[in-house]
Image 1 (tube, helix red, strand yellow):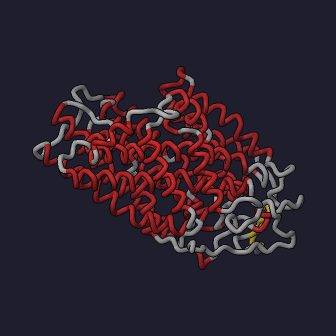
Image 2: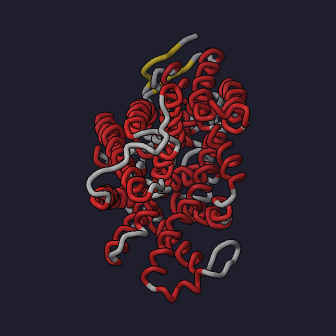
Image 3: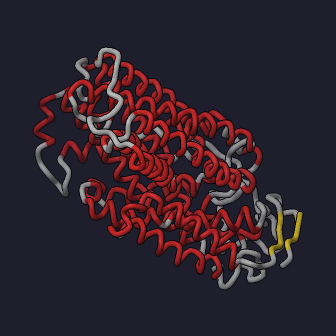
Length: 493
């Protein structure tokens, strides 16, 4: 049977509306808060070590940053992420609600579908892409173990070989099966995958270090220096935060089940600064050792895995990478669209059905074709990603600056015109007015070639601009209730 998380009923005089309240969207009760510091840490133990992140980090070495420059970039990024994730995570712990419901505070009961929809669309595309990348590793492993399968990898049907389709569908179905058992099963999978990931990547780094006779190259032949080096460090740190722009936005989907604020902080401390430093060390060892061996910079750990001479070790390493990629997909790209779809179709979808719909959408977009199209990845996904900063700015400014973390939770579930978050026909015009121009600026900075030198900072600029605009124009009276629905304060104009 699926694991059951405790949800609280929302008691209101203006009864919860059927279009806004379902079991999956309800606040998590105390009995359902089972995520401790270790569970929060496992989020980052898996997600930080994703194949995409390794490709990005190794790219810094290829761009000319030396070992110390890479470490500096990740130290700076980890500090920024730690602060941002705590701000977002505390919101989930206090209210117990998922991101689509959290968005109703700033955007209104109907306007909240804007941030939830953007976050969900980005996640669905990347769910398919990450599943495709994991299936590629599995296909390569099967061909190495059974060379006769090579003929199944030579044809093409909608851009995929027969073997590619089989491995993709196997991993696709596995993820849907895990999600069908709810967030508690995802938590258990994280707990299993995290140590597997850490041990595998550590062993891979040690093996490469020994292959390079116990030393590594500290930089490429012509490393950056002076102002160019520091600019690349700042851009690297900023882009690393942008990579986590999705997680920063909907971290409440996970922390709504956290036992305490201290669990979030302790899990983030180990999972972000400590784990990211460990990640950076592995990156510099892998890239530096490979560069010393043959003068080439690898593009991904899979390049190294494929060179392992022992078939058993090759199989173990490949399977570990697959376990890792599935874990990252569940965390970053499956949960968000599930809640978004439940919010859009509350009478038709629950967590399990929304998981199936997410999986189907991730399949029909043929993600391998998306991944192989730079135009789609850079402009469509890049443009959508640029919207996440302004959304974050509006939501954080509303919750922390204007409301001082006080929320009327029952009113998040009512469409009564007198409800606090009804605003104007369900939309908060102030939030939309702050978001639209900030989003336009962020997208322009991210995509227009003229702004290439500052493109890496588009998330921060968009978030800061949206927060500033919203703080300036959002001057209203707010009736506040705590998570149990009891009035605790009133902020008057």
